[in-house]
Image (cartoon, rainbow, N blue to C red; front, side):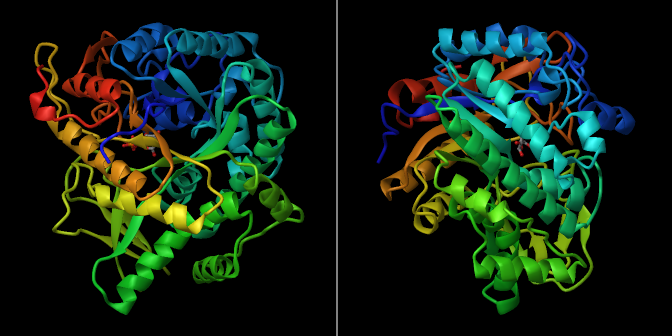
Length: 474
Ligand code: BGP
């Protein structure tokens, strides 16, 4: 199969905090990242890619380069500055204008409600470990549905609950910078799954014309050898990072095997999962109503059995080969010499995308459709007089698109692909030198320049099929 289909979305993804800038403008309240990045002192999100002021230009560029879908997220603290109180009309107006501009340019908006940026006060209250925040989130969602639900047809509750949990409580490279606390990570994931389910319920009760789903980051987990220990490590990592949440969203329960395995991991790490009265009923109802799965895919991991204490070094600078990742009670992620990696040590493994898509189709037979909502390659682009030849990125995306076509030919219903990112944006734990965009952003002037990948992407979008990138004139 070489054709993606007439209605396939060829999109570009962004997120509010990474793109908008204007962190203190027009009544926006603070989110946790303002305080966290200031304390860290390496870079800030104050200007980011200035999408708040330049979104029209970005959407015109999208149209010009065949990008017919965009992921944007709504900054909760732009709409409700302290997360719980008064609504900020200027915040809502910004998103309303943005949506109108998307529609005018023929770029379908996929709108995420939570992309890592919990309002500061609620974050300090415990973020997703505080169950009261579920209610506040449902109210925020209602405000957004009421204001934009007439025009937005694709809603996403959460972006990557696993990243929120893993980075905040296990790796410690996201606020609140806790390390190795697997029990907190699992509890916050469960609470987010309940919040997700409540918002799905709410949306369906409002009889709006659109669809609602969730975005998970789904990384393949492969044993590095055929040994029993390595296979077990891959299995445990898969359970914790992928299956726990997929079961919550698409089965509406934690089947015995998932429950037992998660409990085993929790016990080894000195904790216990608390499932509150009514949680499972809420999950069950939403599982029958969810319209799509958004899947972010960058990488897969190769696992080795590991019996020691947790040990992690996060490579947040692009110094190749510096990563360490071993988790107590699970396993160790190791280098596979046959698989290339990015400068940030992310294995480049398109087969993992294919395998995961097929696995979803086989294990969650009630899934309706999948959008690959993020995929792309972090790269230190060279800017040569406005020319950015990013052939390695093109090669990366091309291979992942091939994997999607392969999965489609095996019957997986994939309806769209979003490059992370539309233009260069802030990278949460790396700053501005880890670029992903189809459009280069000069962060001093905020000028945009189309990279070679943008020209190639246009050809694909126009023909709805893969094209040879060696033939792209640039
Ligand atoms: C995903 C996030 C995005 C984006 C991307 C790239 O997890 O949803 O927001 O940041 O990863 O990650 P990074 O910027 O760390 O390279």
